[in-house]
Each structure stands twice: as structure tokens, then as C-alpha cells.
Length: 235
Ligand code: BJW
Ligand code: ZN
Image 1 (tube, rainbow, N blue to C red):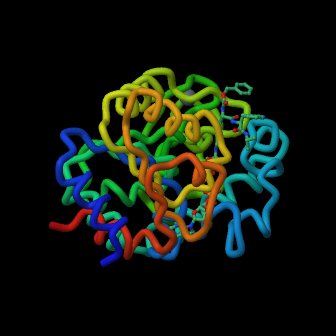
Image 2: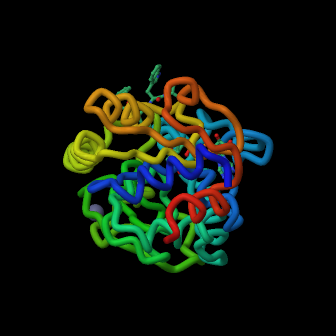
């Protein structure tokens, strides 16, 4: 075992308060496509065409087709060893993922900063409800007759202030923050690492490649999160 891995394991073993910021890469080994990079969702779909309120307003059917396709993928996959290693560890999971796989692995304390594809929200009365069926109708409607939208956060939309406050508190109060499977280009989520660092936390990054955070973290492990997270966390 490399010295850096031993050190990071020791750090985690001694930590009182561990938090993780996860991104799409953590679900990649389950078979959920990432957004960016070689196999990214958005090599085929331009983000600005789909993940904005304007795109939904202009063409809700295409937007719903995309979400319905993704719901089908997620419903057919299982959490992977990375999700399970986190679920076995007492830690706060701050996730940018909307797939619900951390919860399915058994993590109890999950903060979904970008919402969930299993949540629907009425564009008229704002009512929110859960719908877990993989085969959702293409243009779901609310009881009030209003068109429903996915309960996710699109570009240009603010994060739920309570959810963001919980994420910030977790970042400020942890002594180790693991940043796994995220390109760390989307804000404000990517800003959680510098926030934690400023409060004295050690930062451990796990990714297949280097990111804009890599130079400023304490430990950077290059490899699949499904392999590295268990190496870091399993006792
Ligand atoms: C592996 C692996 C394996 C692969 N093991 N690793 C200019 C500067 C700064 C900010 C802005 C700016 N202009 C606009 C903004 C704000 C904007 C933003 O950040 N834009 C940047 C892109 C520039 N942010 C927002 O708009 C946010 N809201 C906001 O700021 O509110 C205030 C505001 C109000 C009004 C106007 C403007 C601002 C909201 C952001 C919402 C993001 N939403 C999405 C879609 C969610 C719904 C859906 O899923 O459809 O969230 S975008 C998408 O990106 C999704 C993800 O959660 C998010 C992050 O992606 P993630 O998870 O990092 O995935 P990838 O694919 O990018 O990376 C995967 C990584 O895994 C890679 O590094 C791989 O190497 C790695 N990997 N396999 C380990 N097996
Ligand atoms: Zn309604």
C-alpha cells in the first residue's frame, strides 16, 4: 500500500467528522453516464439545451424525454462499492448527484444539493411529490392541472437555501472532506472544498483524472472511486 494511502486512511480513522462531496463519477461504475468527459452524457446533449429553465419552457417534451431516459437507466442499476463504502462509514454525504444511489446503498445523512430525478414539482402551484416509477409518462401533470418539472437544479437556478445551508455547515464542520468523482466545475458545489479547507479540514480527492482542485488538495488519488473509496474507508 502506498504511503499516501496509509496516511489518508489514518487521517480518516482518526477523524471525528467526515464529509464527502460526490459527483457523477461516483455513480459511473454503476453504469450511470457522467456529464462531462469521454463517456459524458453531454457529449451527445448540450447542457445549455437541456439543463436550463429556458430549455424546459421552450421544449418540455424533449427535456422530459431526457429525464425519463435517465430515470430508466438509474432504475436498472445498483449502487457500487464506492457507495457502499461510504454507507458503512459514519459521514455526511453532500452529493451533486440526482440519482438516489447513496440512499439506496444505505447512507442516512445525504444532502442532495442539485435535487433528485425522483422528485417532481408543479410549475404552477409548486407542489412537490416523489414518483419512483421508471416508466413515467412523458409530460406528467399535477393534480391542479399544471405541468410538472423534474425536482432538480438547473443552470441559473438557485439551490434550495436550506439544503445549501446544510451543505455549507457540513463542509465547515468536518475535519476531512473527500471530494470524489466530480469535475468540480459547477458552482456553488465546487466551492465547498475551499470552504472546508479554509476552516482547517484536510481534503482528499478521488478521481480518474486531475481537476482544478487537485493542486490544492492534501491527498489526490487517481483511480476509480469504486476501488479507492473502499481502500480509504474499509476497516
Ligand atoms: C470518476 C469516475 C470513476 C468518472 N471514479 N471518478 C461563471 C463562473 C462561476 C459560476 C458560474 C459562471 N456562470 C454561471 C455560473 C453558475 C453556474 C455554474 O457553476 N456554471 C459553471 C459550469 C461555470 N451554476 C449555477 O447556475 C448553479 N446555480 C447558481 O449558481 O445559483 C445562483 C445563480 C442564480 C442565477 C443566475 C446564476 C447563478 C446551479 C448549478 C446546477 C447544476 N445542475 C446540473 C444538472 C442537474 C440536473 C440533472 O442532473 O439533469 O448538475 S449540471 C451537472 O453538473 C449536474 C451535476 O451535478 C453537475 C456537476 O457535474 P459532476 O458531478 O462534477 O460531473 P462531471 O461529469 O462534470 O464530472 C465527472 C467526474 O468524475 C470527472 O472529473 C471524471 O474524471 C470523474 N470520474 N468516472 C472516479 N469511476
Ligand atoms: Zn400544481
